[in-house]
Length: 155
View 1 (cartoon, rainbow, N blue to C red):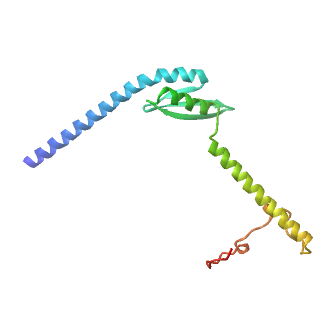
View 2 (view 1 turned 180 degrees about the horizontal axis):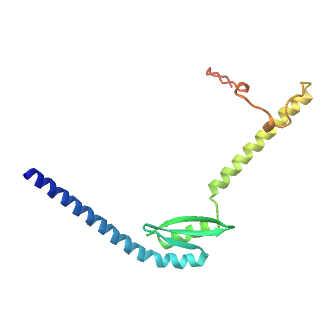
């Protein structure tokens, strides 16, 4: 009987501790919301965006051409960071890394296209059969066109 009493006592204690932690967390979150929301309201009005306040963060969104774009901003974020996030989001700025990657990809595709055109010109001018397609991207490529052997190739 004592074992059952100890188990029930332990279960009750754990349950109370859990409820106390949840209550403490909820009160901290409430205080954080009360501190952050006025700052967010002020900044969001400057950017003419809309906001939905959720339990742990705010969902800030704009509607453009019938499409909704939004970001989540956690409560407790300082005013400068909120302003930077809103400025980047509302004005739809992309990161420099995206632009650099896009330029690299476009350069690689242009280079591959030029290689394909040179390949076709060699075939036309070199007295070959002339049956190759016009551009590199138009040709049918299969796995047979590539050396897939596992033997080390000299370069």
